[in-house]
Length: 186
Image (tube, rainbow, N blue to C red; front, side, top):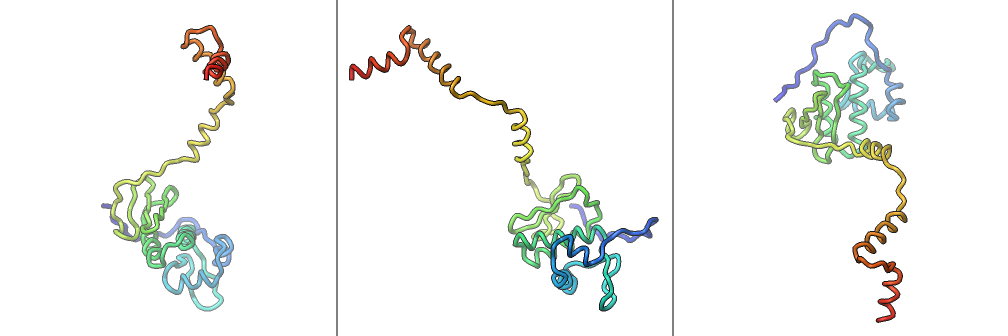
């Protein structure tokens, strides 16, 4: 089992990059009141420049904005506030790079996929490795087959089927004549 630990702060060699709260709200299409509420209840927090009083602009790191976006998306999809809180905590504690990570919401648990493909429970059994989850890339499969597919003349297949049936019957008489002959006898 992999243990998630808080990231130790280092003194950056270059200035940190981030966004002010108003730009985070515009980017994620959330009202400032919602973002402020999430800050107030401890769901999210800006790490570059946090609350320092009224009318002081807060600044969010790239990682912070990704966490806010995950919170917003999970809430939009129906995850409870307590589940989202646990997932946000896991993401804040996560030491790995998020560039290849994914979150999955299955209606009851939030799964965190690491860059190397391992899946961990984020809510029910935090940090517990999940045995198996298969995500099939149906869209890319469809696109691949679409590129390879060629036009098909179904009428040509019907004619070939008729020809094959005539050969099997071993008669020189076309199918249409056989059908007419059987109708006359009936």
